[in-house]
Image 1 (cartoon, rainbow, N blue to C red):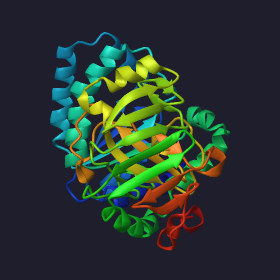
Image 2: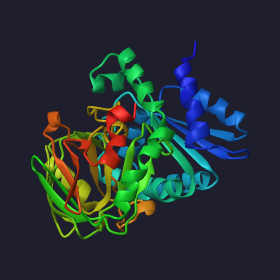
Image 3: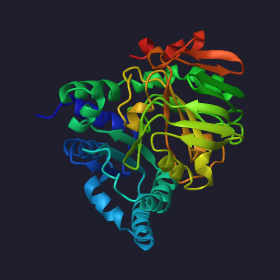
Amino acid sequence: MRDPRLQILAQNLVQYSLDVQPGDKVLIDMLGSEREIVRCLVEEVYKRGGMPFVELRDATVMASVLKSCTEEQILTWAKLDLARMKEMQCYIGIRGGDNQSELSDVPEDKMKLFNRLYSHPIHMEQRVEHTRWTIIRYPNAAMAQLAGTSTEAFEDFYFDVCNLDYARMARAMDPLQELMNKTDRVRITGPGTDISFSIKDIGSVKCCGRRNIPDGELYTAPVRNTVNGVISYNTPSVNGGVTYENIRFVFKDGKIVEATANHTDRINAVLDADEGARYIGEFSFGFNPFIKHPMKDTLFDEKIDGSIHFTPGQAYKAANNGNVSSVHWDLVLIQRPEYGGGEIWFDDVLIRKDGRFVLSQLEVLNPENLK
């Protein structure tokens, strides 16, 4: 019997997140072995008069292809898939793989080639800018293991997070967005962190269930050359199948001039992908009330209650500081007391302390007011 929560999720994705209209072509892109969510989405797209198109992919097969790929091969692959993406009005990407590290054996030069020639033009340039899109994770035993829970407990957590009232959250974001849009100077402090930058005239974007599920963030970008200081991230992050921990960046005039981690050589190789990879393309607050702890899944971790993420690489055009890169790596710093605490200041006014908003107009984004 189909889980009724799954049907609600599919309805929310098709009706609220994508707002599928009659005649819309919708690409449903599944990476993983789950099929019931795909069937639900196909049914919901048809109910709205849309046309579903389905791509089913497997990470182990993808790894095998990438290990010996050539530039000509990636260019051909990208040409074919870009032509399809240009036909789509909507895109749903479902990620439910069994092993987050499946691509860890792919040589670094092959991953760079794939990101530069395939992922960047198709997803960052075409899908993000020219479709109504949503990316979701789908619960399985592997994700439950990462979260340190049983599969059943993780499924309960997942549907609490993903079936949140995102329209209500969107309204609660308005005061923070208004404040961000008129702020110049930002300072972030905490254990191993003291960083300053400007966000003047960049603008901000609410993320409230339209683009990612789970969701719960509000982002902008620093003025490209204004970032100075040091930031120490306290959340592990998986990139190219490799888990990075204890990441620390030192900035001078916007550029990462020193980068260390448990894989210092590899993280510097990522940051050397192109000039823009050593500059920041996004600064964002995370405040999903149900997500409390990291699980090495960026889509969840970047929404953690009381967190920020400070992202090396490509900026989004909706809050554009001009940075261009094949990299967009959301790295998370949690500032709740159990993670060391921290403060965020806007134009010398304290707005969040130890993960909680302290200005009266922003208290609507504290977790007890969003559940």
